[in-house]
Length: 243
Image 1: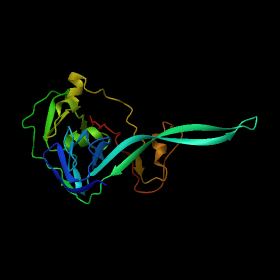
Image 2: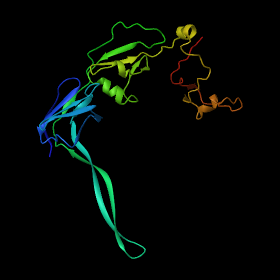
Image 3: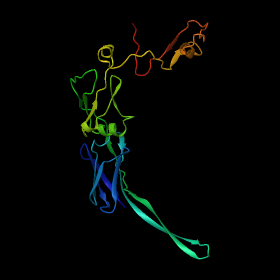
Image 4: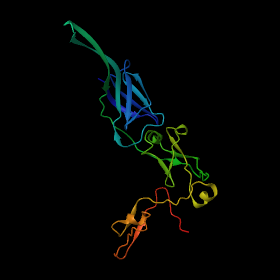
């Protein structure tokens, strides 16, 4: 059975395995590290396998074991005996395709912590955004590409969309988001003001603070409690303007 005796991150994009009894034919090699599958895996020989991540070896927060396995599909035939209406017995042959997987024995762990070594310096852009921001960090691109819902870059509390085509294993690039200010909104229509700032999140000293924001003047949220206070959180993505 396949056995991994050593593994190492050779460069920003590759993990190399050495060991014994790696399948050189008939199987498809698969590598996963930190839950992310490698883009390509090559069996160099029965004792060496190279896995490549086009956007960089994934960043992991703790020592993690890379998983090397070998898969192939095989057809399994079965024969059933059934009775016909004339009491003659006949054989029914059926087949199904199943996947066979050999997971290499491996106790080796690798570390690849996030290390930001630089970023765009003196970047200037318009209020509309769209300029590329660079972050120098090996493996960050793989995380941003693989799970953009949980892994992302923010600028001024707004998501900076990851640009896959502009990023590499060493450098991650994202497109700066539009910046909404009173000036940019008034002059460039970056965002339109809204009178509907109801966030649905209320607070105060009254037991039912929602009554103050239900647009029903006949529903009095008054209370005899003193002091009395009531408020509402700003709607997500909005700010209040006192004028």
